[in-house]
Image (cartoon, rainbow, N blue to C red; front, side, top):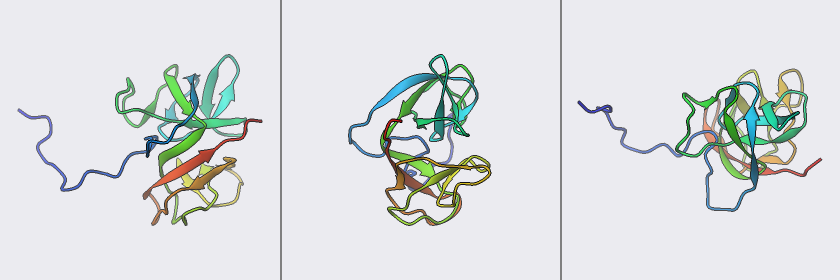
Length: 149
């Protein structure tokens, strides 16, 4: 019996954390100290680790290749996480976002936003919408241009 019995007419444009073009990118491998969603910004943790971005030093986003050991839509604690600090990556929007707009991370929803930094919304320096997002939950591309601190 086949595992998949229904097929969509069109393939999705991508998924969060997916490299969206053939441009070069730079990154490192870190150990997750907590669960991290694909495409979520991460912060540095002592000892070569990373955690979801809150008030720490932003170092990049958790990316994924098509083959991972992860289950679901993210990395589990202690997984090796590829962290990219530049390039064009798949993302989900919190609301409509114009192409070229600077974006921040809303940790409450796990999505990108143009809202000002406050509460659960954290700054992601150098991140911008490479394509427009049509509304909440829509897929778009975010471009990273991280300047090391």
